[in-house]
Image (cartoon, rainbow, N blue to C red; front, side):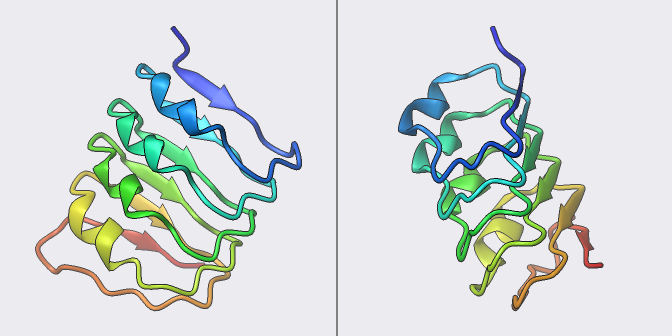
Length: 120
């Protein structure tokens, strides 16, 4: 089964809704595409530890990302995120680093959660 999927720089505007069927996926990189949303089925990727959504056209991030319980690194740099990241930071307990470079973004963190935000 696939553990790493790299779909960088492919002009993708969406991910298939059945991406959640890749149960053993540990790393998903879809940077430098044209994604405007992330499918809710991403929450089924319970082994996902690295998610790179950088350099897309995301204006919001689905709360389903917060249900990826093994997520350690989340990169949402260089998107057009304009919504609160509270849901992700509050519920993704294991995030070691979340990259949010070049965002017009307001962050609201739950103080008791170990979420490191790397803002460049």
